[in-house]
Image (cartoon, rainbow, N blue to C red; front, top):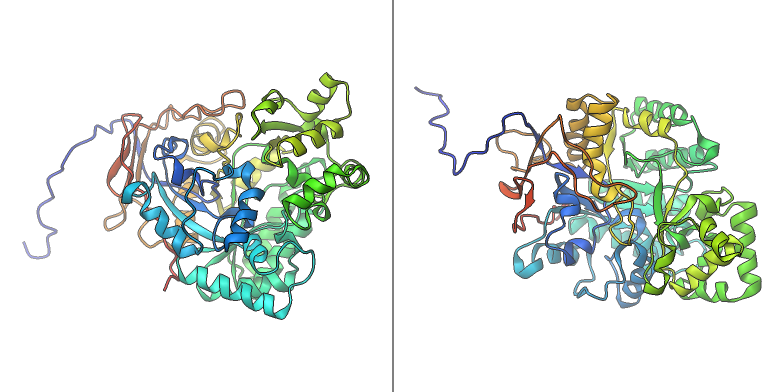
Length: 505
């Protein structure tokens, strides 16, 4: 009859989904797979979780836009996140070039999962200003605005910052506001790792809310935690701040991972002045006894800005990965434990690691609070982000377990979120933040990025002891209608592509 949808198409194949839940593909709003997607066609760390899209370029440090000098410096700076890149052909220099490289990787087949990109503000400052701790000149600010504008036109979805990492942290609010205005003109969002998650955390959140309101830019708060002893029980203060800003018309979202420890590099703990000038300058200061003693005093007594203004507690700093094989004995132990075994002070151990590992050491930092994690994940603007660093002998289990951990532990076992609400946090909400008109829902006309999982058994397999164990209860994952996980096993499909922002020219 007239107006009928017509006959249903004949299926190419049928999947028995009895007892399974069908969901849109999960979107990892905070990923560090910038090089992993280029080197690893399997990438089961994310594919097996049901992740069909990752947002890269996080924390203000990544590999585009760059010139030759900046590329060498950023590779060195984030070796602990992504490896030194010696196995990668860095044949791009622009954001568009990087996104094109994702599309033509592995002989033009593409990548394991889809990827979007944030312009890294620290890299942009490194490119235009260098490593000096000073305000940008007018000419340098104009250069940064141009780089951000170009990156947004070439397909970035927004801009990230790492405001406890050098050199991005050297930018003042006026500089950041100007760059956010550029992002806003293209409909993108600002994703800051803000200036403190410890002492002064609430003030750091307020700064980002105020700054983006002034710039008229959407705000997405990266790994929005309240950590260290000074913030125990203070999640309601953060949520009240967000509710007030939302009520006043601000466009705000956030992501978290469902674990208490954090993960970063050991060099990130140092005071920012110790990193001025770049990685070689750090090593020079560590080699000088007087400078090294000053670093120790800031870390252990004053509270380094790299450690969020809180005096470092070496018993919370667990070594998760090293670049130099001869340092493998340190992995899986806290700095305090290793120091005690050697009969030396913790700083002596930490200084040796930083120096001999050429700043490539990664750490787990056990400073979180479970009640804060639970309260923040309930908020209506919350989304899921793994912050998964895939490097190291003992990475944080969030890299392999974030999404099944949400579904299994926090939805099914603890009831912190209903299953439907949990899925929305991992799919439609992040898709809305990314302004993706054809993803995040199971709906006709949308991309067939889909996950079939068992609500009764889905669970993270990864643990702190065995962090690379794959999840259970996720038998099927499709990207663009192609199975990347089938019957619980990774297929050979490379169905991922670069997902360009709505403001792309």
